[in-house]
Image (cartoon, rainbow, N blue to C red; front, side, top):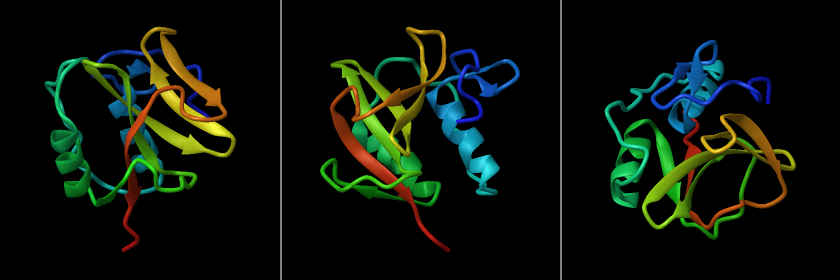
Length: 125
């Protein structure tokens, strides 16, 4: 929640300069002292659920079905359009995500604004 208002920037990894949805997830993981390799070189559109799930499971997440009950801290993969994927962080009362259309990281109250495709939950270790 503390980085809401941060500028959106494709491939952004530093809240000072801007974040995209992957950068937002990386910031959250860093704040929780969870190390992971952050992907680079991707397009804002394209890819597949399988590719995204592979990266997330290699980072230590369990891939859960879209209808699993959500928990705060879950990383939620949604589909804003037929050619675009987006990651959001579940928080109390809604979601935090880097919204390209609004140009910054936002809190969206309530349910997911787009169809949920997968839920990723960090494995306790």
